Length: 84
View 1: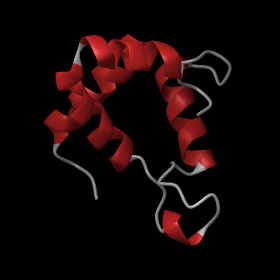
View 2 (view 1 turned 90 degrees about the vertical axis):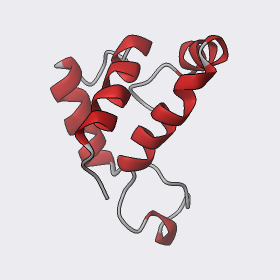
View 3 (view 1 turned 30 degrees about the horizontal axis):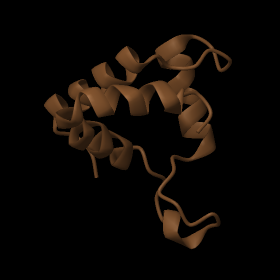
View 4 (view 1 turned 90 degrees about the horizontal axis):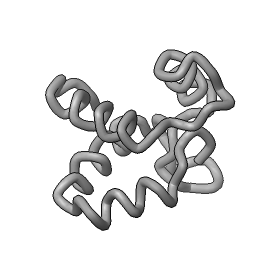
């Protein structure tokens, strides 16, 4: 996914497996509405929403989120108890 470096995140999750459910839940909250109706039939975020989130988090669409950014967001979103 554009905006996240997957390999460093996977390495982090191998070292900290207890954080996997928190990160998975945060990713699930970002999914697009009715994602199952559109190809590629994966629960990915809407492109416009994802770009908005990248700009608000990074200030840029070109710089990837760091592992620390992803983990911080996941923990924050869990504390908020807001979502679908």
